[in-house]
Image 1 (cartoon, rainbow, N blue to C red):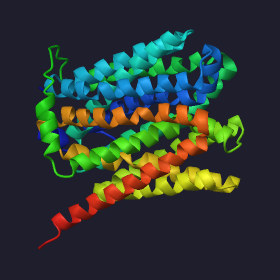
Image 2 (image 1 turned 60 degrees about the vertical axis):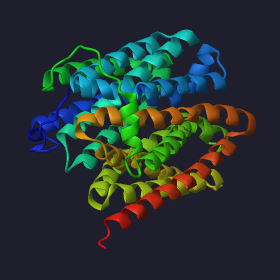
Image 3 (image 1 turned 90 degrees about the horizontal axis):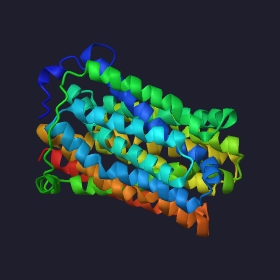
Length: 405
């Protein structure tokens, strides 16, 4: 069983020592893993044309990816708890290498589906194990560490459009995955050398019922999971089709749409560590409320503004909300779990909210194909209003509990 001795947290530095190395390599793994996922939306028009598939089938493939990610969150967390963080993280990295290797050679839709399935499995295992590993090393600076790790996701989004553009210009969309495969191989070697935990090979215990019971009895956690699921639904649906929506409904050129897509993640590079810092200083829930509010206003401006400036402002506010939500929410969730179960507990919570969130791309593909993308994205406004109301109530309840009598 993985254990996190207190001495691992003694320094809690970001740039040196064991904690700095672990933060670096876990963040690099996040960067490479998410880069392959986020390069898919700007490649989607070329993939649809090359593989001769419909928008609905493309949306289904992205939902398969998200579903596999959700389904393997809990097993990934349990493996990291029962065996070791090293075992889980390396297993996730190897699965990602297999998945992106299949995508790099896919000429038929079934191969493409198999590739995104392996990528989903790899992300599902890697993410909870990576967060648990960072949580082992950081306590006082946990929100900031999570923010820096999430900044890697945003940085991946910035690189994604460039990878897509270069790959299509030089050869085909498949070439976008070649540097990702090299990066994942390097990360696997570095992490195996720097981790202080051994590789442990045995059968993990998937204690689902005790885990669900423990989570259900934790005050406020069920509502937070609902919010995370709803927000993930918005996140997956919005990001997966954003370049297409900007081109089709907002009448931007394809190059401008890809630049706007990259801008969402460029903003996130700064917004994620900032939101993690705010969560450490003022509390996770107030930071979550602020992020949801920003996303709600940004999406409304993006949908209903008739000017280019309005679209730009909408994308800016939407980017702050979409990317700034996760560091404080992840910190709030993982802090609520017992030390010995945090990998598995965070994994099962991730499975729940990712499972619901995986419906986002399919929803946009179906509704957008029949009624238009503005209608599909308009539904996300209602979802964000619900998230804002629930998190505001959770914040108020927490304030009431902590206020001196």
